[in-house]
Length: 434
Image 1 (tube, rainbow, N blue to C red):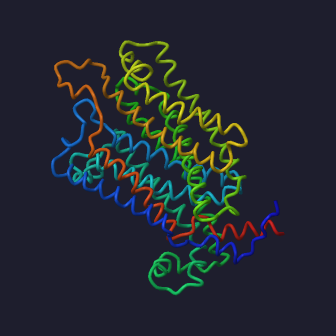
Image 2: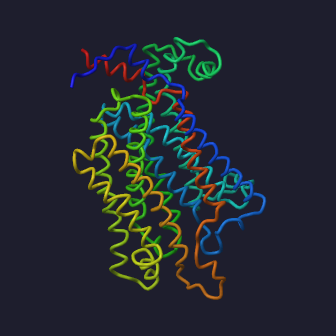
């Protein structure tokens, strides 16, 4: 196949943000409707209290905390694609960096929001900052999430500055272009500015790696420091981090296909990108599988009385269909597909990425709910509803509303800004020609 020769004008034209077509408008409309339904459900929760949920004395962390852990997990993709690959000198990842960063920013934003939703008294949120105690893992989590959010925003914003100059060059400065001017009119593209921005990006990339590890390690400690069957594990930190990298890579793989198809980016997100991302997903999947074996095999081998009901519920009990679907459908089957070169082509990568993301969401649900329903002290003399948990429609609406909100942020971003860095693409194109 003859390789397409791209000019600077063609690259800029291809990568500039485009207006939504009918599919884009329909997609945005669906997301808005889901968000509005979630807002209505949250209004009911604020008005009537947490009684509208199915959470009770035992299952006090329900689908909201599952959603929170999922958002924190998927947000780690920013450090994987942007920081790790950039610091190791991997140049092929350039078209994927902004995709990864906007996923990270939107996910960590709604991860923080869902925590406020989970609070019975959200107006007291500021108490965390006024009366927080350093010995509390919750304060550790608030600290690292806030830090990670600001670093991720900077890693999204600073590489965007050179593109602002391109966005402002051929357009009248009105409407959205005034917004561009507000964000980046100070950028002149001088040698000094490029040098400062490059140094700042390198510092942020170095900084975000330990913060990224900290955010999911500390989140795992919220569970591990709570004395419950299934959470009483020193493996939780590594288990959470490996799972987070896998779901983040899966999300980027699915997003690559969507943006490539609907924005006609075949010349920029190539089959080579899918092939290499597929290999990364397989590596991360094997790592996560290893920690899953550690997490479940050893407790099952010892079968302590306190964990017997919990493990049996996962393996052969009421949670078994969901558990094995998440293990096979969200990890093993995608890995098997991606082991073959044909499986690392665009459409199979999209399917595998979607399976990984969906499986990861249900895996977080399984981390939270079964443990809470199997406390060390048996349940005696409690209502039957306390012994089971299935989210109410308000919980489902709020959970899906938060997921739709994260997708809506990404959708609006793509409408306003280039999803592939224009200036970096031009620079790399010129270097290849030399």
